[in-house]
Length: 171
Image (cartoon, rainbow, N blue to C red; front, side, top):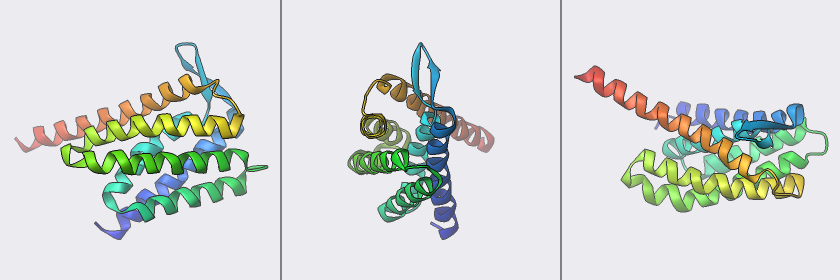
């Protein structure tokens, strides 16, 4: 794949990591529906998993790990104390290792299946570690998981619609 696509996806990945961390600083904990609460960055964090899988398709683990590290460094430089950035970077690294174990083997069975399975594993692993490191509590775990699942479902719906549209236009 072209280097330009890798750079765009890596930059997007870093920007979404930073946006997730800044959202927590700005808005704290927010309602995500169904009576559940989660740190505000959860919506951005939910997108991170799908962008990571796109970057996985276009590059390799070094691009992904580099983007996580850059995202954590940029977040740390913008945050007072860096606790959220450290928790976020650590959690994204853990979820990335889970993704390597799930996404790569399932990729041959289809992008959507691999995306769904890897995001399910990654968002739970990420949520547990992030909440523990950032807040010392798993109080918002249900909210984290549900909100990240919203974002994964949204990305999958967009992917399916995109495929159906291009299939329809070719007939």
